[in-house]
Length: 65
Ligand SMILES: [Zn+2]
Image 1 (cartoon, protein in one colour):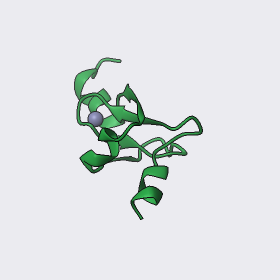
Image 2 (cartoon, rainbow, N blue to C red):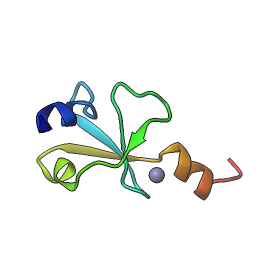
Image 3 (spheres, rainbow, N blue to C red):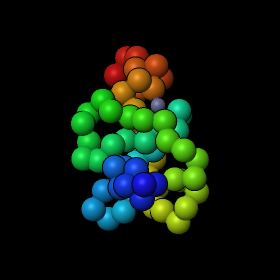
Image 4 (tube, rainbow, N blue to C red):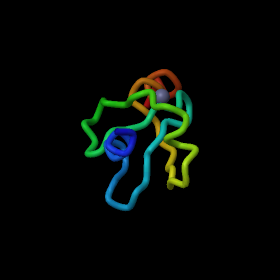
């Protein structure tokens, strides 16, 4: 069950995109606005994690973009 959950966030290369501010993970395939809070164990496992910005934090931190 946990494996299936992780698969929802991994891309083809096994990388999970995480927001560097709120630590939410982007779903894969990306839906654009779907970033979820994930259990810590998901990112603690040997997984490639790439940091990004979710739309919410983007607006919050870069309102003038
Ligand atoms: Zn965020």
